[in-house]
Length: 173
Ligand code: HEC
Image 1 (cartoon, protein in one colour):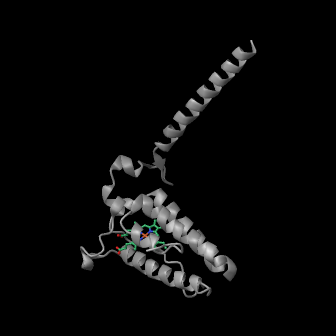
Image 2: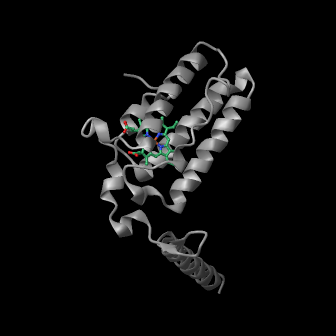
Image 3: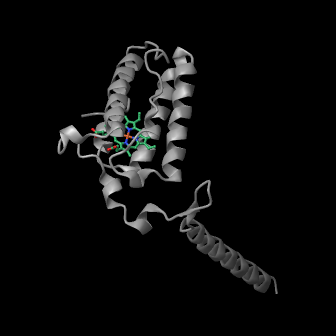
């Protein structure tokens, strides 16, 4: 009798888990909507292979879009921030204001999806936290900041990931 109850209980558990997992995949595949209620299919559905590897830095040097130029500036800034952090010197908002890359034209307009803007917001949030943090905390905050670069690049633009990983504090050649 007891064994039977136990068996039934575990069977129910399995069923619940199975349903929960199925639902999970179902939600992941749900079509997103932007603020106007227009449905935006996730990148894999639209086959955004161009956005995935994106920027080809030297291919069309004279046709660089403003977003690509700003990204290069952000990478230069990050290298300088890394040097400061390693020298135990402060990163200030004055020297490194947040670059509003998400408001300018990208090479591939397909990247301008809700998830992209959400990632931009998260980067700005971590930038604020970093420049406002006391010196002793900036090392940790810098790492969180670079992780946000990586987060967005994993979705929208994997090409520069190698370069961005070099900006992490624990990068080894
Ligand atoms: C919200 C998403 C997002 C975030 C956050 C982000 N990037 Fe980018 N990045 C892009 C996209 C999209 C491009 C392609 C831009 C273009 O070609 O117009 C790009 C391009 C680049 C490039 C290549 C530029 C070139 O053409 O030479 C570098 C380098 C780069 N990003 C570094 C960074 C660094 C460093 C950070 C963090 C400080 C960062 N990115 C944060 C989306 C993002």
